[in-house]
Each structure stands twice: as C-alpha cells, then as structure tokens.
Length: 435
Image 1 (tube, rainbow, N blue to C red):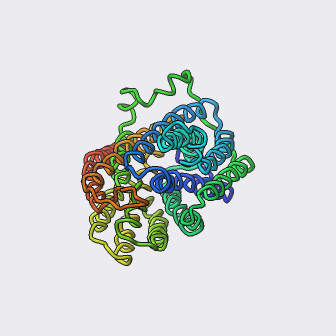
Image 2: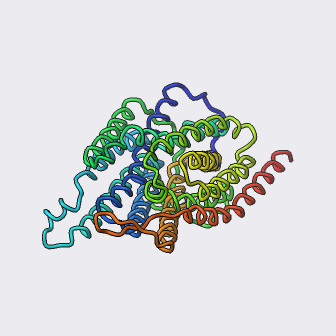
Image 3: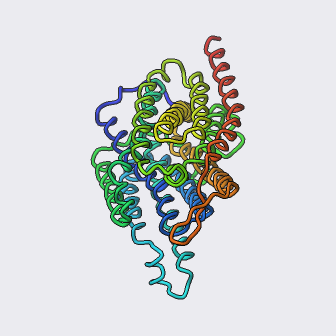
C-alpha cells in the first residue's frame, strides 16, 4: 500500500487530473455511447453488433492496460505514454468519421457493404480502445495513484468520478446537434482534435513521480497480479476489484442502450435536456460527498451508495415522462457516482508499492473487460426478448425496454459477497492496528 506521507496536491497536479480525466472521459463517452448510436443509426440496427463491438473493444483495452501499465512501472515513466497516447488516440477517434456504408461500398463494391462497415468499425474501435486505454487507463491512472495518498483519494476519486458525467453533459450540450444533423464526420473530427490537444498539454505539464522499481522481468510483472500468491497477499485489492466487476456488469446492461431507450422507447426528443439535468445534479452530489467518503471510510460508505444506485435502477422502469425520468435518473446516476468513487479509491489504497501501472491492468480485467463482455450481451438478450421494434427507412430495429434496468438490478445483488468481504477485511486491519 502507498505511504500516507505526501506533499499536498498542488494546482498543477489538480489541473492535470481534471484536464486529462475530463478529456479521457470525453473520448470514452463518444466511444461507449455515441459510437453505439452511430452504428445503430448509420450502419446496423442489430443490437448484437453493438454488443460485439463493445466486447471486442474491451478486450483490446484490457490488453493495452496490462502491457503498457506494466511497462510504465518498469520504466518508471508515465508522461510519455500519456502525452503520446492521447495524441494518437485523438487521431484515431477522428478516423471514425471516414467510415460509412457508402464509403465501404465504394472501397469494396462486390462485398456486403453493411458487413464490411461493421467489421471496419469494430477493428477501428479496437485500435482506438488500445491507444486510449494505454494512455488513460494505464498511464494516467497509474500517475494518479503516484501523486495521491490515502487521505486525499476519496476527494480525488469523487472529482474523477464526475468526469464521465461532465463529459456526457458537454457532448450532449455542445456536440449532440451535429449527430442529429447527421454530421458525424465533423463530430468525430472535433472530438479527436480535443483529445490530441490534451496530449500536447500533458507533455508540457505532467511530471513523472518516483516509482519503486521491481526486480522481476517484464513478463513476470505482466502476469504478477493473476497469480494465486498475489491474491493471497492482497485480499482487499481483489475484494474491491470483484465489487467493481459486479457493479460494472450492472451498468453495462443498460448504459450502451440508454440514449436509444430515451429517444426510441420513451420518445423523448429532448433527451439532451434530461441528461443535462441528471448529469449536473449527480456530479454535484459526487463532489459534495468526496470529503464524506474520506471521513467516514470508503468501505463503510459503499453499502449505502450501492443502495442508492439500486433504488435508481428500480425507479427507472416506472418513469415515463420527462420530469419523472429526470427524477429517477438523478437517483440512478448519483448512486452510480457514489459507488464508483469509494471503489476506485479502495483499489488505489490496496495497490502494492511499485505496482500502480500493473494494477490498472487488473482494474481493466475486472472493471472493463468482464463487464463489457457480459453486460451488453445481457442487455441485448433482454432487448431481443422483449421484441419491441420500430421501422426506420423500411428496416425494423429493436428498441430497448425498461427491462434492461430490472436486469441490471438483478445483477447488482451479486455485489453483496465482495462488499461483506471488504468489511471483514477492514475490521481485521483495524483489530491488527489496535493490537
């Protein structure tokens, strides 16, 4: 575990945490939500395509985080991976605007243009996810562990936890009109340039911190956390990662289909306003509770946070009009953030010295890979089981139904065992400290 002795976070560190955290989540918002809408509207209405794309990109992201995280530990450098990674990540994001059924038909006139477009999007998404995860999930997250300590991580995680919501708010409020006008190429170009610019800023202002080097070879470091001996030596870390995994699966059951649900099932044309109110409110709640998490304890705070998130999932199927959706959505996304902050902080607290980059790879396995493989397919199965459709230009497309939130709530029940294990582990450490 990282020492609690630390110089207070300065303005420069806070600025980089906010800028890189926000821009990284801006990119993931486009990849996790708008790319799904792009595929649904412009390429294929089959939910299995979205599920396959999400799963493949999660696998690519996990490989990137494991390999680059361990490499950054070994080299003791994060800055170059962050800066260079963000630049090429942005360029790759801009390239999505070049893919369409028409462009693929021109490139491969004898092939099924839709199939070629689907394959191209999935491959490009994998490349983009590899680059983004190497820069953000491996290098930036490891650097965040390097510069923070136990006493300030609840506050830092509460701020970082709102970045997905703030990025959604900015995309919905500032760029959604481009997608509604069908100007997808310009949409991806603008977002890509913002990401690349953040890489330049990182090169100028991020400073590497001293990292404890491990004597083992790179390949051994790569698989260190997957060994039973590592799990026995760090039980709290794996309990926290397991809780994150269950929560992640629950979120991925509904999140990839959320915009489509609001627009197509509830017929809320002004869904951007709904999301703006919900995301702003949930962000305020997360920041307000940052110090509370540090004060009452991350493990103790986790159970009520999960209860709020679960209540939001149960309220969403009851909400039908805009005001009701705002209310239920505020509970849901507030709980979403209140779970993410303590779990993320616990993983940092339990990170062994010199393993910050490697632990980010483990985080990707538990919090991204497994949830993004299982969750979207569960959601797709629920959507297809409901068999509600709408016609778009003569093509029947599946519509997400409220059942996706009930399925997410059912998955959430599985979080109880790892949370109880965390409580037992925390109680054991308190007894040992007193003794």
